Image 1 (cartoon, helix red, strand yellow):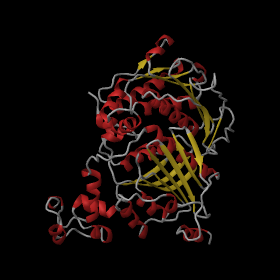
Image 2 (cartoon, helix red, strand yellow; image 1 turned 135 degrees about the vertical axis):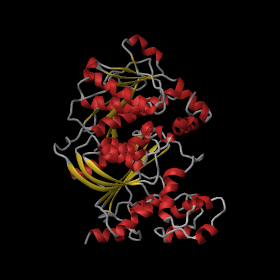
Image 3 (tube, one colour; image 1 turned 30 degrees about the vertical axis):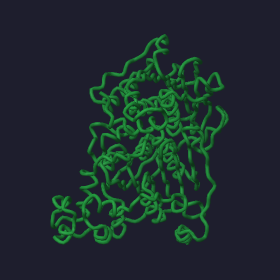
Image 4 (cartoon, helix red, strand yellow; image 1 turned 180 degrees about the vertical axis):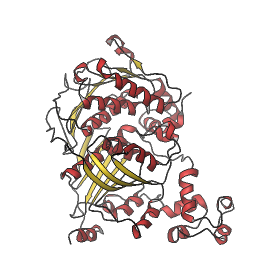
Length: 486
């Protein structure tokens, strides 16, 4: 039986793109067969292995019928993908190994890591060199995808996986694209295959990162997945109010069944250890901010992966020197890097809150029965008899006199928040891509290459753009700019 909840996020997007119900889209995922293969000539290329493993990770999150064709040296890769399969799917059988090319015609999509392109098949080829990721389909205008040897760089390798898996997704829903191109994570530009500079090598020694990580959801999973492979060490305060749930298995590349109900911030903590020491903060962002009055100060860099605009505005108003804001919606990926020393656009001007969006205290008031004013103004105080008497009778059993308001709020977020039927569609290749670009921006920040930017990529067109936008003198961010220029 199809696990609709597990596939619900990608199924909603597929239903939006095709003429199906969401249940039919989820069923379609279980019927399609996908082959992921690595060419013999790429068997000893570390980035090719990274691309393959990350591609299988993403494909498994919307299609359980994955097969592999791997050269003999990649025995461990086969083991790793089987372990991943068991972590994502209940009662998963071992991933089937394909030996003969005679079987190619049996697959609905073939993702090849290498250079070869085979016409007449639902064929997709990806590879990477340094900071550059490449992708082409059999319907593109080239016979082979260029490749050149380069020092290992997981940013390019993981971006290639995202581009390839996106093409797989479109292929299995009957919308195979005609594509041949490449993308640089160093310059955030697109080009024809073989045209872009592969960029400098990564540092040989680890760089120190001390940051806040706000929001530990789908895009941040992609960020952590790539940062784990980069020469980065340090310490992070990771803030997220929710626990991992079964519906997160679809778009979250770190999600495992064994981790369900675990706080999302703790998932990031476990994954990034030991190189990066993560202090998990499973709480509301606004409650975490209380710590800034006491034990914590604002770091030079904040990385965020949030979907609530009001919260993103609140993060921006801390005015760190550099804010890397990662986001994804449907088929669009967006990265904003705000440098508080210049006039580059800030999140206050880049993002307009939707009309239906309520602030954090109003949301929690609706969920707990407590007064929004009490939550907002005095969250560290105890729940009183007056609070309980004023609450809707439906909520009174969940309110205990003497319990801290912030404690009740945290319990609500981690343990009691229910399924939202109005969830946004999400697919792993878009959410992870935002995180990969955010990780590349983090690495570039540590290497001294960072610059202010507003980048968007649409996976329907497979094109990206860098917007040249600035804030004027009336924007709040100019106050932060003045502080950093002192």
